[in-house]
Length: 85
Image (cartoon, rainbow, N blue to C red; front, side, top):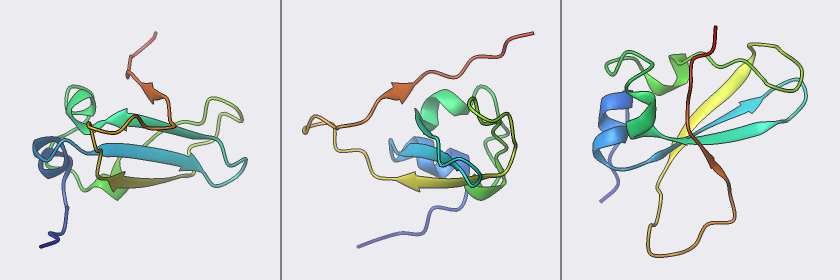
C-alpha cells in the first residue's frame, strides 16, 4: 500500500531519496533524506525545502521524494549535503 509522504522526517524514516531539479536549467541533484535532516527542519514539507542550483545559482527548484531500492544499483549520483561559508 502506498502512503503519502508529507515531511522530510517521514521520507528519512522510509529511506527515500530527495531530488531537486532546477526549473531554469534542468540541473538535478539527489540526496538521501536522512542526510538532509541535519540541514533542514525535519517537520518541513518536502516541496518547501529550498535548494540553490549549482549551475545557474537560482533558487527555483522542484523538490520531490522517491523510493530508493538499495538492492539494485541506481544510475544516479547521490550527493552529500554540506554548508559552506
